[in-house]
Image (tube, rainbow, N blue to C red; front, side, top):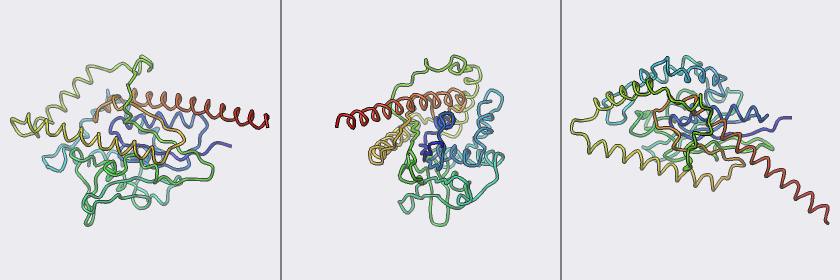
Length: 307
């Protein structure tokens, strides 16, 4: 019988693609995912998995040298965010139809934050599209979701790694995949084919993005650009500290750490590299966990024998 697990996926923008590699490695190790909870990109990847479309999404996202992903970024002049997000979700709808969360075969939860009423919003029923759209609304980047009397943004504001929201099952193992860990990023351990960046493609896309970004920023905007960067770095620090507190409080059985230095917010061109990084981190962490469990069993047996 396979070991059942409850899986929690953190937010992390493009770094969240590493969750794909984590999930693939968990299944390769014979672990069975019985429930998933996620925030932001973790909610997005989790939705792809529970809808049975993660492999299809992976095949699409790793072809960034053939598909201009920046065309999916619908820039806006709104002061509420740089990106509308409509194009991304219209693309997501081509992978699977909308479905109510309560009708899924695998229990699923996404979290968001209601900044009007200052509270966490837990999506465990209703439209999975609505849940993911709200959960990925990174403040100042994606426009927030307005629903009734609420304004919903990225759940990282209140619960960046929702260990307390995942549905637990009897004798399961609680596993968390955290892609914002403050640890070094060792690219040298990745296969050379994966670690190599297609510089021509990268430079072309980054140049295009910077031009779009500069177009929507006010002229003489050096000071405001610094303000924008400061705001985002401050938000990242806040969510990291909240994550550390949650991990210490709810103590997952297995914590898979992926470095926050592995990719920037929009580095989706690194999909193949990030997926492999997630896979390697998961494999290493599970091996360490297995060694600890074996050693603990030996100690228990030895203590029992000596009595």
